[in-house]
Length: 392
Image (cartoon, rainbow, N blue to C red; front, side, top):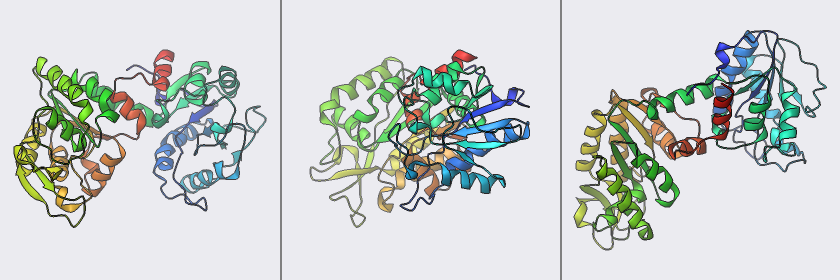
């Protein structure tokens, strides 16, 4: 992917408008409970300040009603945290669309919650042009919102004098491009979750690209049923068996594979007190639920990952939150951590597994994208990314 990078531009004396992702969780009192996204946004801000730019930063926060500002929608707490991290004053500008606020090189201001502006979510072009008039350079550093065509993520990128990717956005696009545009082979994708329906388009897209498509969780149960294996009372979508068969057929036609479990871990109840039973895949009892892959399957999948050139991971293979059903995900995590393959991981449950097994520093790239990451896996064109590519 070819796009302009913030790091390649002359920023000195320029008015730089940064669209960051500062949508952090807060408790009922407004206290920030996880500042990961704020800390991830600091490098772009610091880069612009160090270069001598006049810097504006905005983001959405929560789900405000357009045109109606409420105190709970304010980026005030985020600005305070930025001030702590940067060790400087960070004022918040409330009515900023008219540009009537002082901003000199070396200054930093936070522009109040952009989703309060009428027309933001509908990518209103007049709003985008008004925002574009505020800056010399627009920087999108919010990959997590790249799948939304909004005024600050799409329209502004097309209307601004110059549009570029910030360091966080650039790193994300570089990693995704490396995984899918010119991957080292074999390319192995792990897609797991409770329902095939929520990831059907991802599975279809990957079936055209990858060499091994490892499925897990309820998705694997559906594929097992499609292959004629018993799944007892396991979570599955029996109305999508034909879809699962079609995906497996697509893979076979390409000489690729969807490796199904050879052994499984079952229980007769979904509980942390449930007794785990390790059985062969064709011996699942009618009243049992499949809650993890068995050790033989885990070892086989670990072998595939060890031989991979690229690994894309989205979703744990079993109910890893319960210890007796965590073996498959633990083995998979260790295999990815120790594999020489380029590895990229994304999705909330995946990040939770990475944290649980303490392998974050052994994954080549952990996506911050959430929904944007999943839509990229689906093969969709992300509006914010397409705008940056168009401006390149």
